[in-house]
Image (cartoon, rainbow, N blue to C red; front, side, top):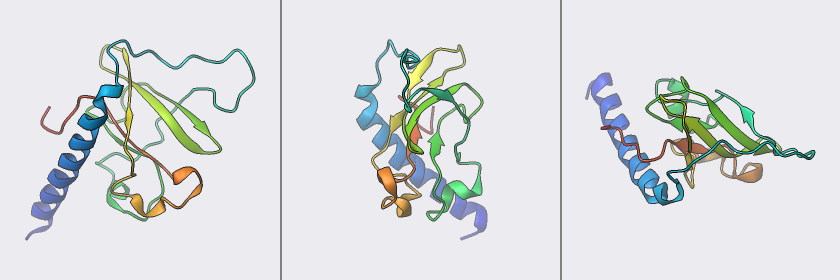
Length: 137
């Protein structure tokens, strides 16, 4: 198997796993998604803008030993992303579609393919998937 054939096979497998998990969690995504509110009191869980994600076009995304948040989205990190975190662990994220409308991302149970760091505080980094999206969309 050539390098590009293996990469296509790996990408297809990961896309299928992610699509299945995202569809399973899609019920949590509501049609009336909104950006997370900024609390009017001091809290370490205030929302913040970020683009600090590994995406499938980055080779580190595929390395199970890299402990960073992953994002699978048709937009990559090109649209606005807002997250909440506590002590360095990303809790929830929202991403804008092409029209600027926010959609809450689905957090997978494991940071696949980077599930090696699940013993880190807070379960380690997360893998966030744009709702209702599959690789064929």
